Image (tube, rainbow, N blue to C red; front, side, top):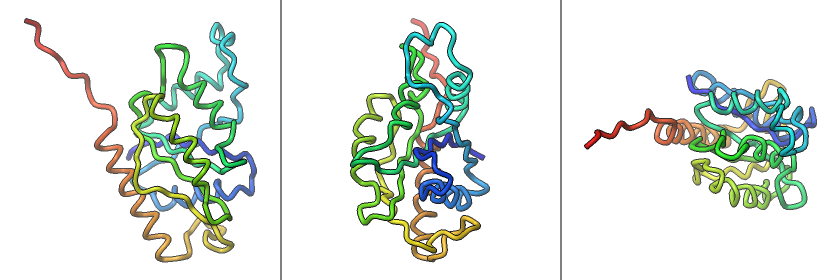
Length: 191
C-alpha cells in the first residue's frame, strides 16, 4: 500500500476540507494510506532555526521523504490558499539542497460550499509547486463544491455520481504515483 503525506490546510474541527479528506481516505482504503502531517505544529518559517530545527520540522521532512506521494487538501481564503500550507511548503523545501518535496508525485484538491470550489486558491498553489520539484498531476482537477449531506458522519459520499468521480480521481492519483514516484538511481557505466 502506498503512503500519501496529506497537508490539510484548515485547522477547524468542522472544516469541510477535513471532511472531504476523510471521505477521500475512506474511498482510497486498501491502496493509499493517508498520513496527515501536523502542519499546525510548525513554527513560522525562520532560517535561523536550522542550527537546531524544531521536532515538528524534522518530523515533517522525514514523513514527506518516506511517503510515496503528497496530497494537498486546501480551502480557499481570499482567493488564495492558506498561509498554513505555504509555511509547510517553505519548511519542507529547505535548507538549500535538502528539498523534501523534490520528485514527489502531487495532487491538489479542495472543497468549498461555494460554486467555484477553491479554483482560485488552487490556481495560486499550482503556480508555485513546480518550482519546488513536485511532479504535479494536472488532471482531473477537483474543485469540490460540498453541499450538506453529500458526505455523511461516517465519511461516506452519499451521491453515486460524486463517489464515482472521486474514485476515478483516486485511481488516477494512484497511477500517477506509480508512474512518477521515486525510482532507483540509474547506474552509468564508466568509460
